[in-house]
Length: 380
Ligand SMILES: Cc1cc2nc3c(=O)[nH]c(=O)nc-3n(C[C@H](O)[C@H](O)[C@H](O)COP(=O)(O)OP(=O)(O)OC[C@H]3O[C@@H](n4cnc5c(N)ncnc54)[C@H](O)[C@@H]3O)c2cc1C
Image 1 (cartoon, rainbow, N blue to C red):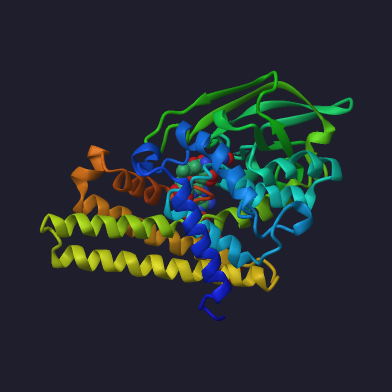
Image 2: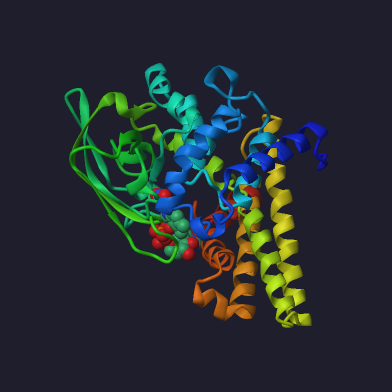
């Protein structure tokens, strides 16, 4: 694997940086507070993403015939790195680009592609992810939201939790049970969020303005055309989505920026002790390692190699590094973290602290590495 960027990739990154610098207001940090889930960021994304699309920079890695640039996965990764460095002005549209669109392209009917892909490619629609339930987080296959067959369609009943951006979203990528227990009875639905029987409630949290929601589904009637892929075969789609999601956000970019900013504050205050410096370097080394492991996954994608545990390993490395950053902030900038005034310190603490839960918990990554990579026997 060659880790140096080509001239063309470097030029692509510089072009992106220029466009981002021109598009973001001077007081971006104050206005957005780097909160992907804020009403401000979401509204901003509705003009920012169409602008990116018009520049050919929203979905550079998608096929040309679907409005993409036909570029390789490294361009997608560079895009993610530059976006994440500034808190991701695409807001939740990053999910469209990373995994919603690819899932619809791979598993959708022609009609579903016609309906959704154009909108995603033009940056005019927001999706949320309806996976987790009160009793089905890590054990996602235990989900109990039901989709009962009725005539030409389904009737949905159940509830979802922790749904990021649900009240801002136009559509929900929803999992529901259409068959028996376990992974074999699950189907995916492409559900408009504004339908009779859907109630969305914000769950207040320090994570961000619209970071968490509960979504209640009561006798929601949907046509069968809203089902993505075959009935009861949704787990295959889930696996592909989780792979794209786990290595989708280069979260280390913002963490590196936060760390640099935090050290800058300590230096300015004369509080950059030997211990603080050593801990910052330890965290920085962890972030660099996480970056290279993520790039290894992207390299596999570029070579069209099958998905393997390198995704889980890279994700776990990111969790480990982000925990070092979170601990560093708590130990050396405790008052800044609790004051919640400096947007970079605040977002840094929130983001790094939650990496081990979002997109599947750290322990689940370890279980997968233990089973599939180390081939250790399962513990009863
Ligand atoms: C910022 C953020 C955004 C999120 N956004 C969304 C979203 O948009 N849509 C969505 O559907 N979900 C979302 N989630 C939910 C997330 O997917 C779940 O929090 C995660 O899957 C864990 O599930 P849980 O919270 O139910 O915890 P649990 O599954 O109850 O786990 C609790 C603890 O037990 C550990 N544990 C559980 N099972 C095992 C096991 N078998 N072996 C070892 N340890 C275990 C876990 O690692 C964890 O530490 C989000 C979460 C966060 C933090």
